[in-house]
Image 1: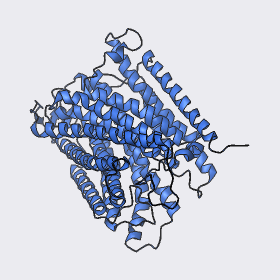
Image 2: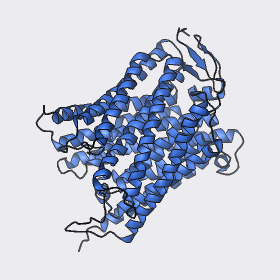
Image 3: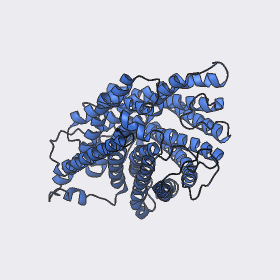
Amino acid sequence: MAVSADLFRTCPRTGLQFHKPSEMLMKANAVAAVVMLLIGGVLAIIMVLTRWQAVHLVGAEDFYMYLTAHGLAMLAYWIIFFEIAVLYFCSSTLLKSRLATPRIAWAAFALMVLGSVMNLVAVFKGDSTVMFTSYVPLPANPMFYLGLILFAVGALIGCFVFLGTLVIAKAENTYEGSIPLVTFGALTAAIIAIFTIASGAIILIPTFLWSVGYIKAIDPLLYRTVWWGFGHSSQQINVAAHVAVWYAIAAIVFGAKPMSERVSRTAFLLYILFLQLASAHHLLSDPGLGTEWKVFNTSYAMYLAVLASMIHGLTVPGSIELAQRQKGYTKGLFEWIRKAPWGNPSFSGMMISLLGFGFLGGISGVMMGTEQLNMLIHNTIYVPGHFHATVVIGTTLAFMAITYFLLPTLFKREMILPGLAKWQPYLFGLSMAVFTLAMMGAGTLGVPRRHWDITFAGASLPYEFPGAAWLMLGIVGVAGLVAIVGGIVYILIVVGSILFGKPVDAGAYSSERGVLKMPVEVALTGHGHAGFAAPGTFVVALVFLGAFVLYYFVNWKYLSTVWGLS
């Protein structure tokens, strides 16, 4: 193994080795992510109390401004800052490699901070209320688009630093064989991110030039089609990243190895080839796109991406079941899960993330990705119900779960309030599950997606929604507030631990890369080849399949009642 003059620290608890420049960058990106989560969370309070018709907190003008900022802070900034930290962890730390070009990585971080601040300032100035989608011809302040572009360029550079680190690790033989599955998942996220950011640049740079008067007009259909290659594909980065986190937590908590690396890697490959096609479901009501394009994107090709997620949904809990059964938890189908450490917030957060993403986000995503069924819920509040199930329960909760592992290993601090931390994933995850179900229920009843006031007060053609819709929005309000409390608890624990947590023995920095092998390090960087011996997971998978088929055909039955035939 080559010896570098760079400093490395071996964590005594886990055996993981941190390159000092990479460690500092991981901390910076993670802290920036939590700051953006705090901003988005404060704005979420306003969103929840305004959509709750009985409260109706702010007026229309302020509502749309705050909604624009909320979407950007949560969907773009919180998640992508954290994902860059994950990329550096999966490349430098898991491969025991020095990080490629730390100075360039710091420049990328600076661009991301500058861009995100510029963008949010433009929104709060009040002249860039164009929502997360920023559809033309509705104009925003040029600083709005420039901020997004700078942030995207910084994130793109971060992806290239990650790829460069993989090259260095291979050249310096810091690992044996192929890269670990967790790193392979991060590589999948980086590849999708490059496609996603390129899509954003293709359309946002001309839009910026349009906003300053150098381009006369941007075709709205062209904008929507290309923009969703950025807007929805950013969620596909999240999927690949949080699935990698699932595998990581299974290894950390149980020492679990993948049941079949070949199958899991093939599933990640399917993400690269087909996952972005789900962007099409935002365009299914646009008359300018051909039927052939819509059918291909929302049927045959999309199903291969769905297959990939179903594979991960089977292999992650399956690997945990296998590890538990090897420890002697073999009674019946479910002793392995009953005896799991449900008081460990890393595990409970990961499992709620997996189940919520699959049963709520996955099933609803396939339904709304079907051309005919999409017309039932397009532009209703069902759509944010779906992506809160994927982005919030799936990605955000997974990132929260891995944070509890990173506090002592990366930040070198004991976690404060451990008793409260045990309950945080339940408080946040289960309330978000109720929140998303209520949103989807209201959307099924026709409640509009972005309309400030469902009473349409003062409209010449008013519309009265059924009482159940008002009930659903009330549940959205209550469950949303409880989820926000869960988010506040997470931020309190993270910030409090970093500032006031008891320092832990973190290991000394040295120019030598250690060879210490401990269970977590071995599980994370090893390779699994076990057969399928997880009957409990298989039963849960059958329950999922039954729920999916039932819900899918219920919606076809619902569609058949929209237009009666005589």
